[in-house]
Image (cartoon, rainbow, N blue to C red; front, side, top):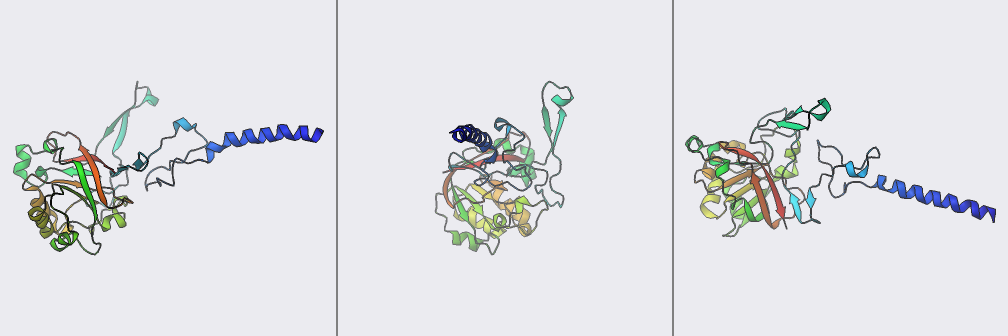
Length: 279
């Protein structure tokens, strides 16, 4: 009888300890949203209360909303550099140093990470005339979009464009290429061997489709070998908007609703942009 009385409090104590410790073994959806290279693991730490643990997701709304913008980190690639972006954030006003609030400052090229190009990027007379990112058509940047997988063996040529059989009437297309498979946007050093549009591929798209939003998964929509010629073909008519460095990992091809919003940077030919896909 005395042994039973002794065991009951011990069992209750054990149960209480299990209840207290159980949250510490739970991670912040790390299986669904693996840690992105160059960022901090979002697993719950035993040194902080649960309500102070930031959760950084890639998918929202029970799998319906996909963030297809890259997170800005020091080690992300920038155009034709081996060193990556480097330190781009500073905290000149800090509460730890007596300021009333924390106020960060940011300095980075406008064509860094997921970003948009305006016609003034490659046409100087458009730049001088004011065709900046503030003049881009938000209707083009928001609406039904098609995510397609591009054949992995070449750049996006006219022949590749023909093989995709994109129907007339489709106005927004996101092209997923070998760049995603190679995870180029997660590597600090810029890689000139990325996949992009050749001049003839760009011309075929302009002449034979209704596409007005062209999205791709590295820092340039144009292949390195046709860097300026492809941009000129796309942007000369001031109707096509280029969205570059999209994060298209682990998303099924198909039709989505895309929503992209650039900053209203008066006078700028490019801008960081936040893009999401919604089922």
